[in-house]
Amino acid sequence: MELTFVLLLFVTTVSGCGLPSYQPNTGRVVNGEEARPYSWPWQVSLESFFPTCGGTLIAPDWVLTAAHCIIFHTYRVVLAEHDMNKEEGPEQSIMVDKMFIHPKWNDNCVSCGYDIALLKLQKSAVTNDKVQPACLPQHGATLAHNYPCYVTGWGRLYSGGPRATTLQQALLPVVEHSVCSKNDWWGSSAKTTMVCAGGESKSACHGDSGGPLNCKGRDGRWYVEGVTSFVDGRGCNTPRRPTVFTHVASFIPWISETMARN
Image (cartoon, rainbow, N blue to C red):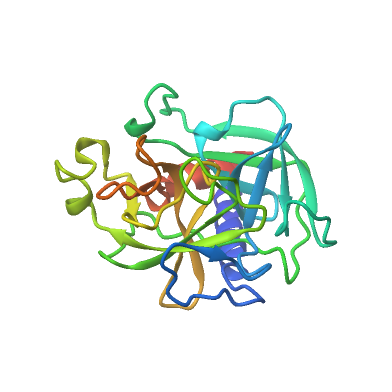
């Protein structure tokens, strides 16, 4: 019975995922730009007393985020959010019921990896043209060097700069592990359970943590291939220090097990 449940859960998640009703603007962007409203319908704002991180809806009642984002006891997620300063109508605010941080996460060592967490919502989100889950990649799948992906979030527009009020997106080509782990790049801080993307003028920044690295598959669906984890301490746009994401495909067994048991 449990096996059937897991398979049904996986099929349900995959069949209605990764196909936004409002197509994102995927023209090549040098630094970043405001996203087309509701074109990333799985993007979540994770909030406690204030907006703290991003997240990704991967099932109507499950959100994927970064472990380092979980520092308070109470959270809510806001879906169909675009302009943080306006109540635009379609937003859905749902309290988080349970939080599951990867058991190997060490909050004193972000570069050790395992920066991933799952949030079980108190109730299922209402999926519509503005709220839809992203697809999960296959276990162990990897991305080719320079594969075009997009980071999305409301983080700082640049190091030390203001946080964005509207959802931003930036094109971040993947930097393969053999390059990212070179000594004059991230070195041993880049693990095989991570994905590097961007660098130079393009990166995630503080406040984007936990949000998705969105990559379009050959099937035309969008997959959450990464969870925004860390940038260089010297600044978000440091050369040879691309943004580092948790590699979601490395954690599919843990994600599936956690969702099935809870």
